[in-house]
Image 1: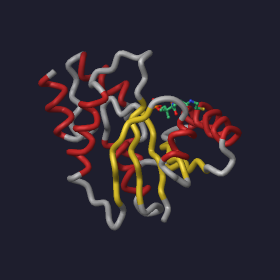
Image 2: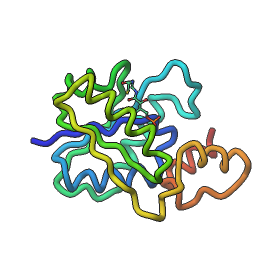
Image 3: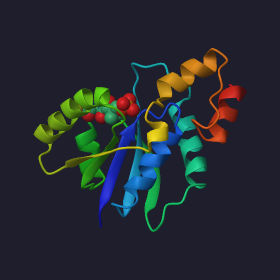
Image 4: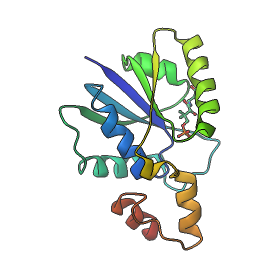
Length: 160
Ligand code: PNS
């Protein structure tokens, strides 16, 4: 049983995140999409809203034989991974600019929990520039975000 944690803010979930989940599904039997509860940040969507949106959009993607679960966590990721008996952490890397931060986190997590591996995955080129931060910025400024996020996310952003 290969279980991975895919941690992040997912505020909001983008098509890039979904692409990574689908790729991760080829490697793992179970992926837990884990939303960080971060009291220091003021998010666009609450954790409960992000959980609900993720659960909805995940119903619409092909997962093969892999089970995808949505959860949230507080505190250290390695501790949460141990509680959930996960073998690996999945993180998406888009460009070389992501690498430095991701490497730092991966090595710190390895120091904290040597048995837990971090697996970096590359999304499709079409999503290599897509981030939740840019999606929110473009949306706030009235730009088109169609194709960058699932249509449900776009709708929920408009509703807000
Ligand atoms: O989507 P994000 O915001 O880039 O995700 C960052 C996340 C959630 C992976 C990272 O902030 C995290 O793991 N936070 C949990 C706290 C923790 O374990 N910190 C030490 C990591 S080296």
